[in-house]
Image (cartoon, rainbow, N blue to C red; front, side, top):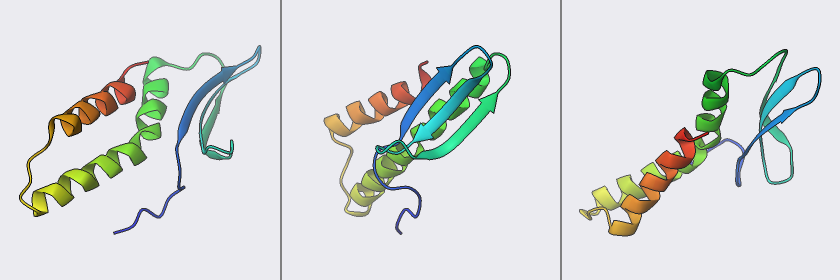
Length: 94
């Protein structure tokens, strides 16, 4: 299976000015993958949803590694567990 979405690193950003706040997920060249223009303040729930979505590609890559190792009868290595914990932290901490 091949990921058919936007390739490369996904970057989460929150921007604001006097009239709006914007949440974006973009590629390394600044092209938007997802965006939301919101009047007023962005809720923690909305920001958390975007943050989690920005990590989805990394999570998919980690699941592919885990599945590949499991098919080979290999166990998770210590650095895999550390990478998983780091990915969880990146996806849940604002």
